[in-house]
Length: 530
Image (tube, rainbow, N blue to C red; front, side, top):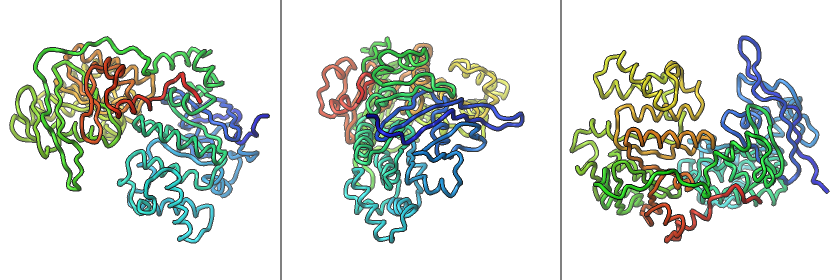
């Protein structure tokens, strides 16, 4: 006998208002969730997944509006409900967690005070009892020593721990339906696995139905039994995860599966560079912070000209600190960096302006990395204005060349970041990074925030640019499948140290260190469903 329905979405239509009327964004979406069921809503960025999820609880942003359909939560039509009734429902019967917990938490309030507020919003408990419940919830979601951590602030928690806090807030009233919007996208593979296990445990304990929004088919397979594939505002395929992923009926589903990079995907055709002097070399690099934390601990590595080295590890392993040391953005406590055979000290030694030209970085957040008040032409042209004496017309011509090089039309130069997709924004970031013809490029989680189709296109672009421009890459990522695809040689970082390094063939076939084996074991696979 089937479990009872808890959520039914019927012919949901959403549009965006403009001067000429309303333009449709989501077109007649139907969706049913039963008690205890876990379903995934997958698709590219811009397909309407998040907008659909927000509209279910009537939180869709301006200037979008629901133009048709019904959303029934145990028979209550949320689209017809009064705002006061919705306030009683949100958080108590229907809850949501988001991709970036840091932007959802108030940075100047303690975790405990924010949990207490969430608890008391639906239950008028005395403050002391609500605080005790907050401690209990933190323990329930796996925060160690919750009684002492309840007084900490969001910045004192790791990304994974902040996501646990958001989950605690969402489940504090044991809602009937939990919508999880990309809850693991920004997390490393082991933290991702822990968060998925936690959601699984809580869903079973409370009998919650979970709608998981994701662009990661492997995550969908690991957590859900049913999948809904969304494209351009429409559900184009739905069914059991095992059937959809093994025998997709729709061409778009096949496209998503074809673009997904997994541990079973063959690596890109690029061999390791075995000869030649290193372009950049770290020798015994150590960085100790004032608290005594050894963020980087006697790290030595070398990257040859034209090579791609993949650097993998959990959040907090020291990857970002190491890249800052290599780029001269931080000063090592001990050890040194050599670039093209010349010792480098931050902002001293060889001409730092020349070093800035030769060493560039592409960051994780495609949109946040760009100045939203500047046009693409101004953004890409800024390094040219700072580091060269090019005239304005010459800069404009060079920007057009760079945009063409990364696969963007010259007309994109007049647009602002908000007018571009995430993939287009990352292409702009890459264009800016190569504007000064650098030799060394740090790609710091450069494809972790984009969907699988966009990710594949960006990786192909990076390979082509390396071939044409002779670039040297340090590819930093928590996604082992992507690293295996792009980087012929890997270094695994754990607690500030390089614990294993070597060819991708050897590391993925015969990992020597326990941490490497743990990282590989945590990677979800599309063919493995619950």
